[in-house]
Length: 83
Image (cartoon, rainbow, N blue to C red; front, top):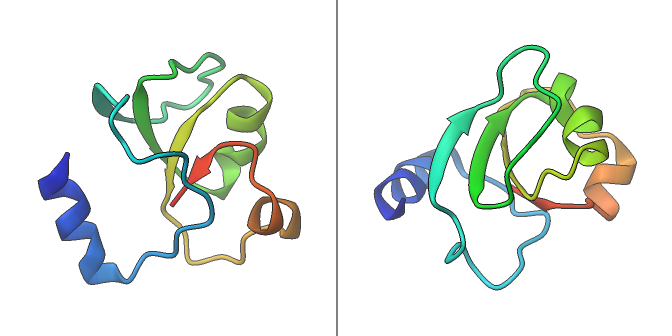
């Protein structure tokens, strides 16, 4: 996990919210099309298209891969850990 985060630093990521580090993360997964359930100990990677589903179905940790503007609600008060 540390190696992944070090490599992501090259893209100058913006941290929107973080809760006490990443100690509870077991693995990393890409969000598959149509996924509706999310485990709290997985760091997911997704796009803006996944934001609402992730927020509404208990997602906890998300790396957002996008070149689009983040909707205001998620930028100001994301309901999960968002990078």
